[in-house]
Image (tube, rainbow, N blue to C red; front, side, top):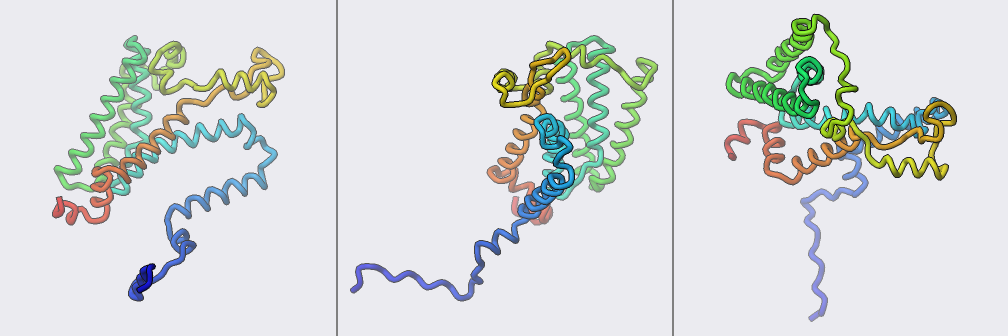
Length: 258
């Protein structure tokens, strides 16, 4: 009798798939390839425009971070088989409410942010309740709220201030702890040291002469990365994530299995 047991034969009924083919059929590969192609094209045709300088990278990273934050919530909804058309109007409405609370009413900015956050959560919950209770498509319900929120964004400042734009929020947010959490920067000391060491670009003239062109990483980017990681964890490591996938695949079957 042999000391080593014979390896079990592979089941001929199971189709053998190479590792390369498994990688090619993954949906993530399409996004990665698209990103590589886009960056390669920009590097070829606009490489000398400053896009890949420290200031250029910071500029498009901040813009991308805004879309990343929006995409996390939109992705969860789309996987669940729903859609929210009121996202853009909600952003404008939230900004206007923060301005009204902090500038017009004179509240502290941190308080204005928290109240606006709760208000927006309530509006989002109302969207969900209407969709679930009435059975109307989320497309229709959120389309209605798109126009409602857009109307309030225009009407409220006209009603209160007799104008459509309320300025001064930047000045009001100076020194506010919660505004810094969402709109501040981190690693400012590190970037100042890198500038002094000549490792990154610094301003050569003007009031900011000697200071680094990029003086820190905006919290917007930090929040975007944190929310992406959180969304990935929810979808892949929690029961709630399984419910999202199940609802998007077959909502009725998901109800039957609990």
